[in-house]
Amino acid sequence: DGPAAEQTRSAVEQLEREVDTIIRTARDAKPQTAAAGPGAGCDAAEVVRERMGFWSALAEDEGRKWRVAGADRPVRIPVARTDLAACLDALLGNVFRHTPEGTAFAVDLHNGEDAVIVLVSDAGTGIPDPEAAMARGRGSGTDGSTGLGLDIVRRMAESTGGDVRIGSSVLGGTEVRIWIQLDGRAAPVRQRGHRGAVRRRRHPRTAATINRPRSLP
Image 1 (cartoon, rainbow, N blue to C red):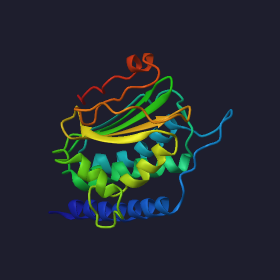
Image 2 (spheres, one colour; image 1 turned 45 degrees about the vertical axis):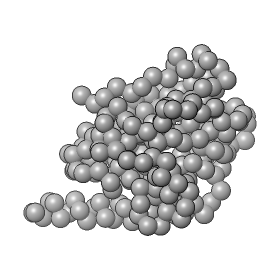
Image 3 (cartoon, rainbow, N blue to C red; image 1 turned 180 degrees about the horizontal axis):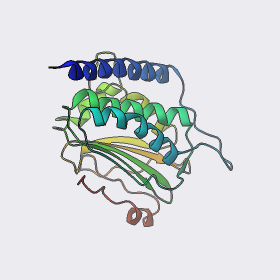
C-alpha cells in the first residue's frame, strides 16, 4: 500500500463519519412532507445530480463505474430537499462502506403518474436477507450494520404514503427501491412471492412508464 491508498482510506473513513452524522441528524428530525401547492417539495432530479456529483469524486478514486438515469429533467416530489439528500447520502454511503473498491453503482429516477421511484443499485455481492436488513433499519442502526440509514429512508418514503423495498439489482448486487407517492394516498399494494418487486398502483398506466435500469457498460 502506497501513500495514495492510505489517502483514499483516510478519505473514506472521514466520509463515513460525515455520513453517520447526516444520518443521525436526519433521524432526530421528523421527515418534512411538503404541503401541496405550486413549487412545494423539491426537484428530485436536481438533488440526485448534486449528490452524485459529490460521490463521483470518491468513486473515481476507488475505480468505481457509476451511472445516473432519469435525472435530466425536473421531477417534483413532495419531500424536503434536505430529507432526500440525507437519504441518498445514507444509501450511497452504504454502497461505499459495504462493497469492495471498483464495484459499480447507479441511481435511477423514474417519474410515474402517481409516484416517483428512486433506485439505488450496486454490483456487489448483494444482501442475503433483505427483510432482516430492513428490520435492522427499523432499529437504532448504531452498530454500523447494513441497516444504517434505512430507517430515515423508510420514514421519508412513508411520510408521502410510499415505502421502501430491498431486492436484487440488475447490476448483480443490491437494489434499494424508494417509492415516493405523489398524491398522498395509501402506499401501493404488495405483490407476494417476489421480493423487491414493483408493486401494483391505482393507475395501471404508470407501470408502463417504469422500466428496469440498464446495466452499466
